[in-house]
Length: 102
Image (cartoon, rainbow, N blue to C red; front, top):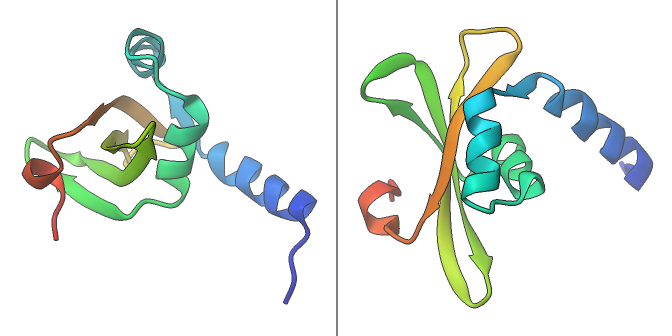
């Protein structure tokens, strides 16, 4: 089956609408100069989803992203118990071995 770009965009838009950014997450986007499109991509298509050791309501969506010849691990913390799901906080790190479950 072939899906048109327009239909794929609409599906992505509807799926993203199931997530909202908390005020703190929006502030972190600006403070850390992160691209909102990359964060949405990580949430939509994560390489891994991990449990947060400190909060059973939180899932950590993460993916490795290459930017300017450097690989970062984007970590997006999502409260999956709330509707819509809330992106609580986010960051990128080069400490991939510390967080990435292989």
